[in-house]
Each structure stands twice: as C-alpha cells, then as structure tokens.
Image (cartoon, rainbow, N blue to C red; front, side, top):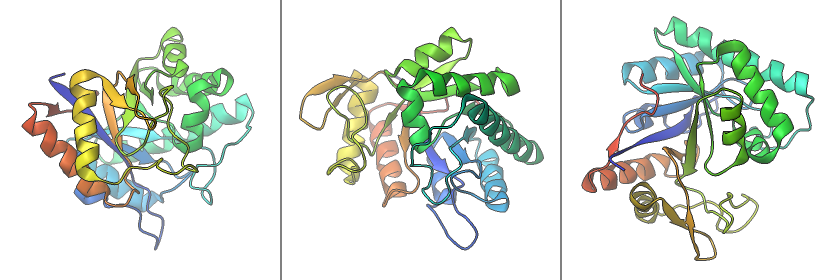
Length: 254
C-alpha cells in the first residue's frame, strides 16, 4: 500500500476539561473525527478544532454518538430506530453548520464508542445510522470497523464506506476489538504500535491478542486522541510510515 489515511478523535474537550491535544494531532493526521456534542465537545471547542483542521488541510468527519456525556459515549443504549435516526441527523447537521462557518465541509461519518461497536454487527441500529446519513447527505462516507457486516450493509444501501483499523487497540482472533474491560485491550508502546501499523499497511495483517495472525483490510488507521501518549504514538506511526515509503493522506480529500 503506497498510502493510507491516519485519523484521530478530536474536539472532545468540554468547558474547563481538556481532552487530548488537538493542535498537535492536526499536524500529524490526515482525517479528524470531530465530536458533535453528544459524547463530548462544546460548540466553541468544536469550532476551534474544525477551523484548525481546515487550516491544516485535514479532512473532517462527524463523530456521532449515543447521547451519553457522562459515559463518554461508551455505554451501550437500546434506542429506537426513530430516535437514533434523529440523533445522528442532528449531530451531522450541527457539525455541517460549524464546518460551513469555518469555510470547509464534512466529508464522512464515524460513529463513536458504544454506537460504533453496536452497529458493527447490529443491523437494526446500523440501518438507522445509514438511513440518517442518507437523509441528510448521501455523499458522506461511512467509516466502520474493518471486516464488520456494517460496511456491506452500508454499501448495499448506497453509501460509500471506508474500513478502519485501530492502532492503539488489541484485536481478538476473530478480528474484533478486545473489550476495554479486559487486560491488554489498549496498547501504549509507540514503537510496537507503529511497527504493527506498518505491517497492517504493507501486508494487511495484524497479530491478535493470542498471538495468531489475522487479516485486516483497512484504508484508515485510528489513534484515539484521548489515549495517554496519543501524539507520540501518532508521530511514531507517521515516522515509520515515512521510513517504509508509505504516504499519509486522507481517503476523502479536504
């Protein structure tokens, strides 16, 4: 693979509470998943991050979530189809407005946290997210977990998709993310993470938590902005990509 997208979850600070280092990350990544206020982020902070992304030619995606600020969007919710459609439309619409004011556009949608994990295999909630995207802007790309059924469902529904892998997360032998409740679910060694991502980009494989080798076909790699050492991890990935002749560029051009 000559090029690959590198994305991060940004715009998650709220009031006096700071989350991640958006300014530093925007000099490294090619795509930014911007919080839309349901799991994190406030209007002024989101606007600031969107403007900075536009200034750095970083593609912008709507990081939509369940309405769960206290749980940072990581608690599963059994919402109705109609509620989820409306919630996703609302969040995309808010970010589209902010992006327009910043002189840029929203290019894609990436569900966050529990919603991301739920729709990977839940066709009912997955269809609600797909239908919401189509209702507001069918040109938006849906970013989802590599090898998950949601990608095929979205494609059959007429949406373009991009498959994503996670740099700082461990994988099960079945290609799913190891639950954050389990030991070893989150990776921290920047050099190890970067080497894994070079393997992913060049060979399409990763080592699962049990040591087995699994196939992961992904066009985008995520570094969680709220992870400890996130900026250092992203820098090391970018450095090892450069050394391996891999270009970091957005899958959706800004």
